[in-house]
Image: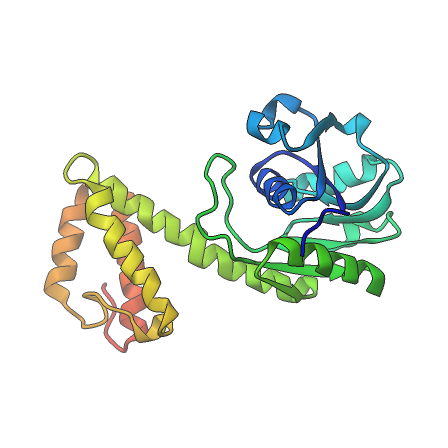
Length: 260
């Protein structure tokens, strides 16, 4: 199954828009990228997609995707002309209301982390959809199936919970990685030392839940090690506070007294 008979307009050329344009283009869809700054579109993408200004965006397509920051979606949507096709945004945290001026509208939220300069290593990810009507839902489901490993119809309230969970497992986790790299700083090779640990920790989740595979000094109430780590972090106040706060969360979770 491919999208050879489908037309997609991507509004915005940021991280999400760039990757969705690539994915739909590989599936054979005719992809147009409409944006304010055409120069921001990677040259490689220009060879497979039609790149135009917002003013020159085609008025008819199967699917229009606003791949924009949450804060500007209402403004951009309000300024768009009448469009003949399904209009959806890719946000995980706002509802369909900003697109209500369009007859067929919805949400097309790819639940994955994207950086436009980095190819996707994990090509399987779900897409969460919400639609104004059954026909729109059918089109969004069809388009999602071309590029995703699963499609889930979720209202805004449930989608927001998924988005919140994503912040924990991706954004906050990446902050922890950054803390590890900061400690490494020229003292040891973070890639050689920390990457194998990160990969093993993540792969375990294929077999058991996170609660079943928790390890570390806090779970066993190893105060000597914890205090030694805090001593090391004395010169890094932000990391000290982060370590102590997270340690107390774990101590409480596993029935131990918290640090004063």
